[in-house]
Image (cartoon, rainbow, N blue to C red):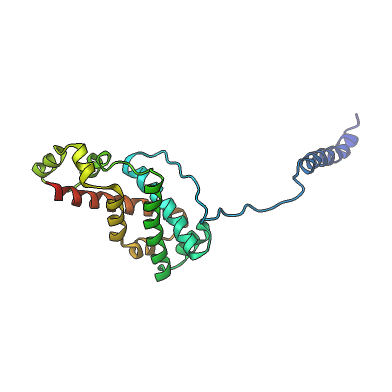
Length: 203
């Protein structure tokens, strides 16, 4: 074949291929485009985590809490994340909505029976606690049944949420992608501290 004819024919072949692909897309419903809508934060959605222990618990709590806050503010979780990342500091309304959302998340997890027993979290909470070895040993000697009878996971979580300095946590946010990580770290530390305080009261 003449090289010139080959060069002239290439665009026609490419155009035919593109037309064929477009035809298949349109035939399969690709002729219309609708952007994905953000999930409704007021509708309960499942939360899955690959983490374990307190990390998994707080990850679950934070995701549900952010949904709860967004629902109270009547915006999507994505919009709330963007607002928090763009502002120099959170508003009183945002702080209040987030705290209420976290408390509601604890209640939902209690109702769903997804909260672990407090005895399952003791070793992890004690791992980095600043306790003398005698007190730590005394706590570890407590039977799991006694710990679970005296302490409830939802109570410890509510205390942790009440102790969070949400304004400080959110004021340090400069990238929405870091919101979950910052919240998870802060809530995890608060849960450990609240649990250790309650364990000390048992000894």
